[in-house]
Length: 275
Ligand code: DGL
Image (cartoon, rainbow, N blue to C red; front, side):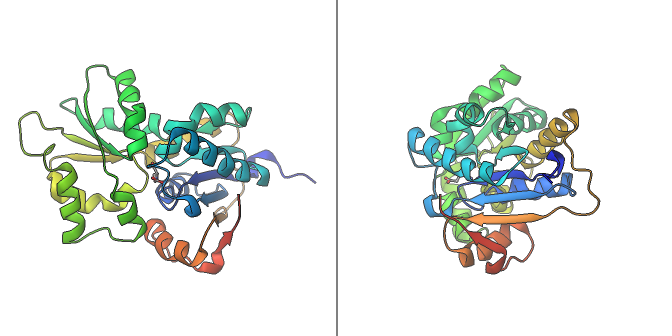
């Protein structure tokens, strides 16, 4: 008997652990859904690579999830969303494919009072300009300051999320933007799914009056709305399954993944795959 479509998992991928921040928001918003996560750690980072390479890697990662049977694909990576959203929507049509940039832009425009927003992300995301465009589509009056923060992803993947070294790196990237000038941004958009684990350190640097937003909760909300509208919400009782795939080193994935997931993961919980 074939599995009813609503009980198929939602497929979620990122280059590494960052997308677990989105997975967590999905598990909180839609606990009954089955979730299948792939972290392409063998090829991380995506954010310093060319759009062609990011597109190719994203297609392969998404293809692996599609092969297993999913009812929706969530690109839990801003870099892959920026470089490959239309490509994946076309390649896997009619499967619904959602990215994190539009929901993130909605969260940022809802949070700002002054209209001045700083977006931090990987080099590829900032160069692609997708956040700047998405924010201006929602509110053309917003002023957007965009800054790549390349060292943040390796820090997060190493599990370094607080302390003087992390704060010094945050200060180096953001000190000149948030320096108490009257026109300093009042909102910091975390345009990379890794960055939420740095929130405390970032708040120290940008000040308590700056709102720090990410795309996890608004993406989970967009997924919930889409599934409800298309009558594809999982109706099974109880908590859904959470299954993790990685392309390299399950023990390392379990160690750092636990930090992002907020729950203990064992290497045995992580399935090693090849793309
Ligand atoms: N988590 C990814 C993002 O949201 C970036 C990580 C990477 O550079 O691979 O952009």
